[in-house]
Length: 172
Length: 118
Image (cartoon, rainbow over all chains, first blue to last red; front, side, top):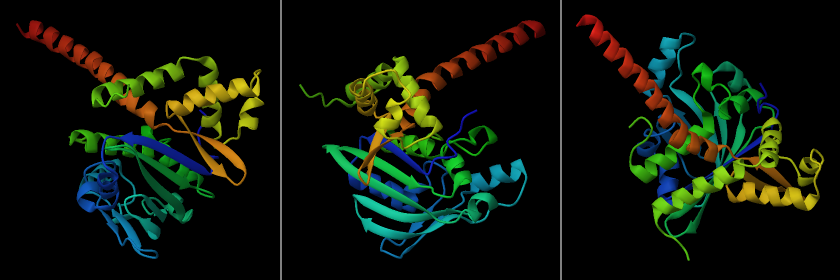
């Protein structure tokens, strides 16, 4: 099967019937981040050089324990805020700590851009620069979904859209 | 006329995705980007027996459907595959019917087992 492993940058875009402020909050606030995607709380110090951490949810820890292998660390992603311009633009570094392979690939660069296209509709574009991080790229493109690793950014952003538009995420 | 209804707007978004996918050239372009993302028009054009203008038109349809997102890198315009709309169509249209199929089978099993025990 052909995979997207050799690509260096991934771009995802989704239109959400929500204000840019609501989308911004859903990305940067723990009470929102635990309700969609991989379901962990995030911690953002929203200024250049500020720390970013994402934590494993209890569900994720349990699911991974059942699959066997190494225990899940508390902090599953870390990084640093490069630029924060709420509710329009967030640039940060991003390193996956969940597995040794992607962790060894080090920090990548992630940019969120939010534009209000018509009143109440936001266009969210996520650009992930993944130079030198082929394992992480495969995971984020959803290439390991059949191994139980989830659908990557497509799933996370679809879930975010569902949550903001309906009040329910995929898990209800 | 602008339609502000969220329901009709969503229908329109899905329509664009299905229309964009209903053409073999456009599916070919998506497959090329799936193999390797972030390509220029010149690169994409070299794989097709088609004028540059024709390829541009197809890319435009894909962009309108949000299946392709472009990004400037220096003097080049790079085309990226955006899989999110396909995911949304999958979740909305395919998962739903697969679930019904599965639950129909589950119902059948249930019915047959009921008869067994009767």
